[in-house]
Image (tube, rainbow, N blue to C red; front, top):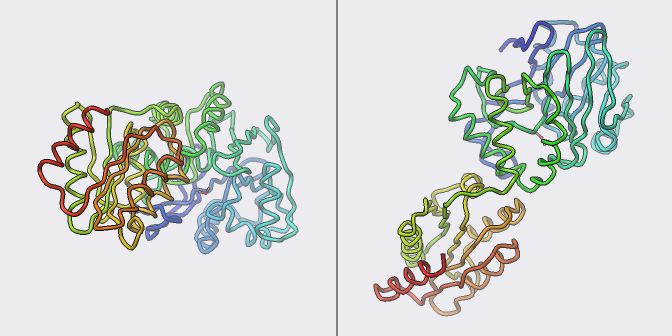
Length: 386
Ligand code: FEO
């Protein structure tokens, strides 16, 4: 792929990672991209870089525009290695390059790479003039790392947003009007649910910080660049970060002999009777990162597990650990499951959901195979509780 022009002097020089399928536990079934941007001015600037193994591919793109040794500044919006991985190699090849980062970014880059980089740290509102362009820096700590920062280029009305507003999509297309908006939004939602969700309060602050800026382009560091749908993705971030949920229930379970599954189906049909949209999601068939995408807009989270060796099933334990880390707020939850003798799983699931701060419904368990009479009682119990 060649560099892609955003405007006359600004180029996408990132790389597409077609093969990426797992981003620390998040299933990236559509791959991803690491977007870096080259800005040609009297002083030449690179905004963010790529994962280390892709450094040469990025340099080939930069070389199609200018000699990479002419780069004066690297703005490192975020030290996570999908964006900073190529910095040590670039610093070797361009000894006088100056790296610009937030104060936390400076610390993180030094701690990551143990190199004596030439770094200048910036704070909120600091500016960098490169000739006809002026960059303004807006640190946004914990969206989603302590060092995270966005950079605004006023003359072109471009926000270089790093991870914010990103999506894990590998495509040859770069702009939102070139690709299915439905898929972009689906992946943006998944990205929010699996990466940004725990920092929703900080996202609210960031949206306030950005509200005064005129933004024509959001140049993300993953996936598609927003150009026609800037206000749409900002409105979605506003909604997702506000903990708004729909009349929607998720029934998530694993099962050994279909007994917990029978309970899951009964619970789901009770929600349906009450007019809820619902998703019945077996942990055998659904990846936890796809379940999180559904949870983003769900009011109820019901989780079922049979008991195996005095514990919940490992699939359920893994899901609950992931859920707790992503910390959705103000949800209602319920534990359920079948058992043979010990029956510890339902209590464990209940406690795990309670520790997420959810409002808990009464847990429900049943020995061996649920019969019609029990399922009828379960249905009535759920109908009465929701
Ligand atoms: Fe895309 Fe937080 O790195």
